[in-house]
Image (spheres, rainbow, N blue to C red):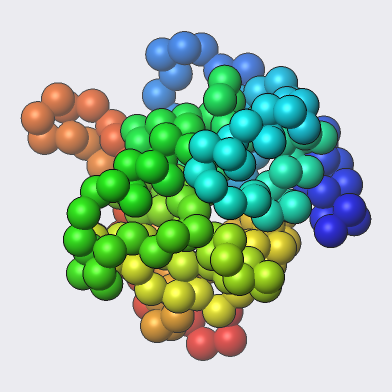
Length: 204
């Protein structure tokens, strides 16, 4: 795990957030070029802050996430993704890591039943799609939440970040990838990002 954290730290060092104007409009090609380059980094946090987050959700965070928060960045704001941080770090529409978990846990019934205790939404892909890690499983297996349902993936949290380092995270056990593309919002006339499914090519 320490080696993986070092690799993530080195990747972030090689791919610092680009200097973009606050009103910069990115094309689909820009998004492909930037890949998994962080858009914003955050100050690292102390073990005390991690302990408070764990107390708030009621279970320990995976050691890999702890290491990212304390050694790399308190979450990573990206282009096609946001790795949620704890208090003061990266937040999505559902808030920080703790706020997102509480929101999902108290959100009621889903297609797959009540929200599973310990299933932590940690990566927001937009369009209400989240990667979640099962913190009750020592293998830290990944699930994808989309459309009021949860489905298992075939990889763990460490494998998620190994894919992330390569600029690609597959999020389907049904031979499809979730991809993002740029469209013009018909209501505002401005570019926006949407997610959809694309059948995975053989051997990809």
